[in-house]
Amino acid sequence: MLLAIDAGNTNVVFAIHDGSAWRGRWRIRTDAARTSDEYAVWLLALLGHAGLRVQEIDRCVLGTVVPAALYNLRRLCREWFDCEPLVARAPLDWGFPIRVDQPEEVGADRLLNALAAHHHYRGPLVVIDFGTATTFDVVDADGGYLGGAIAPGINLSIEALHKAAARLPRIGIGRPQSVIGTATVPAMQSGIFWGYVGLVEGIVARIRAEYGAPLKVIGTGGLAPLFAEGTPVLETTDPDITLEGLRLLAERNPIPIFQRTSLPDALRSEGD
Image (cartoon, rainbow, N blue to C red; front, top):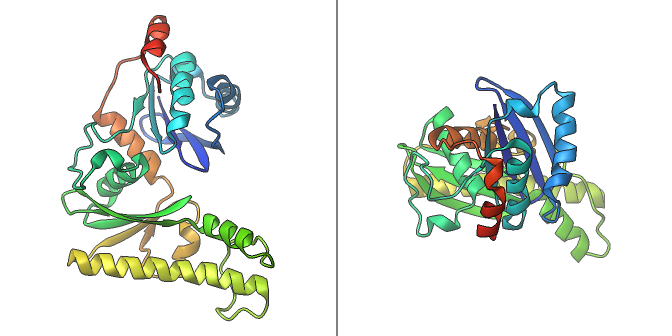
């Protein structure tokens, strides 16, 4: 079975795939200082609760946009699962061209989203990921990655508004009953929700105009279903796109099981 690890700025998601379906998904808050043993205590308890055994996991794949978290996540795979993790990076075989000026700067999550979206939905398309940042990634008809746009995430914007304006409270995100708020909190909810709907519609319209052809629009991330209620631009939502990208990348780039006896030399030779 495959252990897929998606380490984002806010959460790290661990998921198990048995070759035909996802058997479990668990998330923990991202903390670059968390050790491999701390991850293991938490994760092994969840695996046991799901009826899964460590010995069943023979492959690991890891994608992260937090470089400082890579070292301990890699140690987790080596020390507890005897696997050398495949780390999602631009130089791997992605199965499609990365048509940007500096491929090494593209976040692993964006390439993983492009890989899975093209595999499941075909192109041309736009993947919108509502995460810590809201990213728009454009995939050509042949699966080629063309780049996109990055905007502040919804929760980041809410927190910035609360911290910068002394009289504005911290609010939760939700679809307001009306655009015209009759009190401070509904007014803030309206501005955040409909403001992001306008952001999505505006950027997608400009991408379509610049691309010059119809584009499917796929939404992912925890807030994608909420915003799909507010605009027809989001044609499909898929919460598993990034995990599916990790699975597909592991299939394209098989690596052997890591030998525990070589761990000391491997760790001495790697600074990450």
